[in-house]
Picture 1: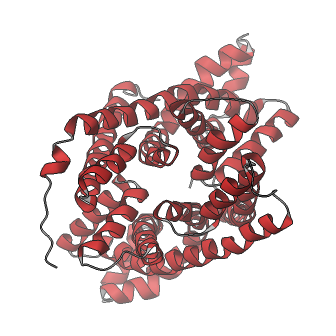
Picture 2: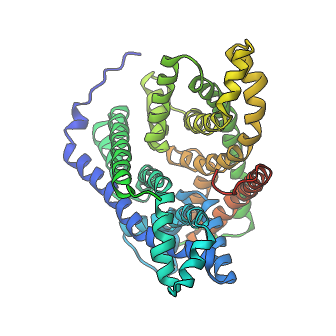
Picture 3: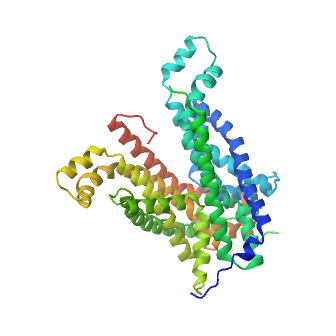
Length: 221
Length: 224
């Protein structure tokens, strides 16, 4: 192998790399912020709500979890505009990420809800609490503690999965890499650098979310 | 302007392209499973440096996007002056990626076997390979099956990434048909349907097996 590695031209593009990194984090954070509350509500519907609604949520979960994210992304970017819903690449990306995240988060949160003993809900009712207050003060707060680790790793998976968004030309990290590759012809070096950035991001967020976990759930049961 | 309508022939083209999705999935499952088993066994082995090395490998593989692994291999092959072949690159990348996940899944199952069994096997004078073969793996095997089938779904969905290096499997066939027919809703709806038909039976089977194991062990389903 007589190939001379040269990372210079890649690092010369550091402003774009930084911007791409920030957009990757931004897309993931926004999708999670929008998706988690929706998932919490839908998980409650699935566990405690009317049968029919619960079944519809179940079908949604099965469809999303059994089709690739890339196809969901194409659907959001190509099919929705054809059906009359115009979006920018970034909006389509966030929309697809939310739809995807919600399906996985519903299943995670539901496992947490099922871990709450029914006796506690009945005790809440006996104290005269309404359904929403029982859900908020008794069920969700405890369920969150149970499901936090799984949600945290889902966040990291979402962060890594956001690399696919480059396929519809949202300008995040992987898309930036593609652009730099075209200008510099340093294919391997570009993706080497990007891979390290992704690794650093996932290690960073794992550590960060782990610290939050320790701080937030100090109380014992 | 559209070149043609999305009809039966176009749908049939998607179905035939799906065979490459299946072939690629089987390769990744076979290769990744074999490599993953070796890594999982290294992770529970008595040799510390081996355990640490494999922990690092898994950290890196699970901490980077599968798409990056694919690109690295695809462009990495090019460094040797060989023209990168999307087919070969995809097979290697998905094998490597699957191996890390299988290793973690199976290590979890192996460690679910009570420590006392290891200790009593060792006190009977069995060596590490013998303990695995006679005591641990036969028991772990049963709980390994549901998550393994569940991960096959992830592999099938993951093969769609191969379309991004130009390998014509189901996802890329969908893109090709879409540019010809300009009917994205029907095209990608059909593509999604084919993926669903491939994946859903496996998801369903995995869940059923898992809840059956949970029932016989008398604990709650779902929290495996």
